[in-house]
Length: 77
Image (cartoon, rainbow, N blue to C red; front, top):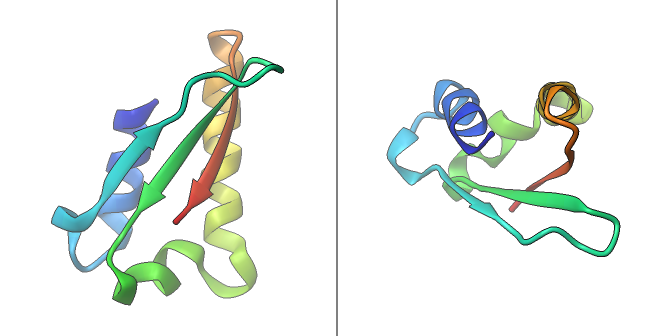
């Protein structure tokens, strides 16, 4: 999952070296939270107009997680 999020994020930003993905331990519900960190100048690119790109990234992550019986949440920091 981390690789998938990194590939997607690096393809969207101008500074792919600044992309970092962090994974939290599962919470009480079993949900794993992934944090995407990008350069400050690239925040608009990763979020998109009205959050459309961020929503698409979250949808892809959730659909991938369903295949392996996981619950995931993606936050953009």
